Amino acid sequence: MPRDTSKPHPRARHSHALVVFAHPEPQSFNGTLKDTAVTTLKEQGYAVEVSDLYGEGFDPAERPAHYPERTDRQVFEPLAEQRRAYEQESLPPEVQREIDRLERANLVVFQFPLWWHAQPAILKGWMDRVFVNGGLYTSSMRYNRGYFRGRRSLVSVTTGGPAETFAHNGRGGDIELLLWPLHYSLHYMGFTVLPAFRAHGIHGNGYAYQDAAGFRAHLEDTRQAWAARLRRLETAQPLRFADWDDWDESGRLKPGIKGYDYFIRAQP
Image 1: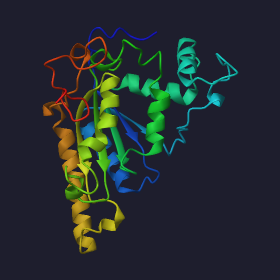
Image 2 (image 1 turned 135 degrees about the horizontal axis):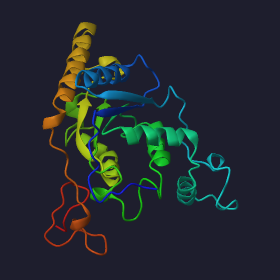
Image 3 (image 1 turned 180 degrees about the vertical axis):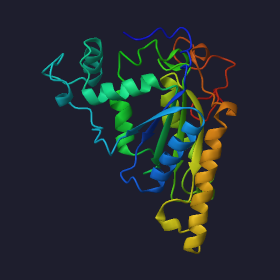
């Protein structure tokens, strides 16, 4: 049964981190950042696990075959099947494995490249399957009442274009807006969401740099900046989102509540 979310989840006696890694090449720079996170967090006293989504062959597509014992064999309703499997303790093994990993962690780090203005499909599918309806969220167990209340999440994303192209007026799109759906989903699940680490100018063979040495120096500077960021986690101010007390009965912001981001805001 879901744990009581009326109180923040107590911090583990020894801090435990989960790194969810979503890149098909272990030797990529994303792989380097993943390894840096593991090493740095261990230096900070964390026990660290890695979910290597590609390496472990995680299936991101929710499908009827995942549920041999169906609630309805005529029509596949993913949310109903998730709820039943959770209640019957018969979730697919790979989903239960990921939930167990999340349960052990009080910090979850997501490492991935920005593909087509969002996270890779394997990471989106991981969320579709692992954030189980009726178990890890319900109609009343969301936002600041969410299952993972009291735990922190941190996104680390790489982009091909330089930082300027992901500014509010950049041709790549405002990186804050591109990451909003993922950040908001983590907030929906109850996580305290820390500001993302953005590594720009990584893909495309470093086209923004005139020589290979300059590109290598940029990569090393980025890696060191990531390690430094991980050492400052305790002082990071989390992102703010609207919570239960900010909504009226229709699900809209109450009068006088301005919201905290571009996507959910007061009537102009």
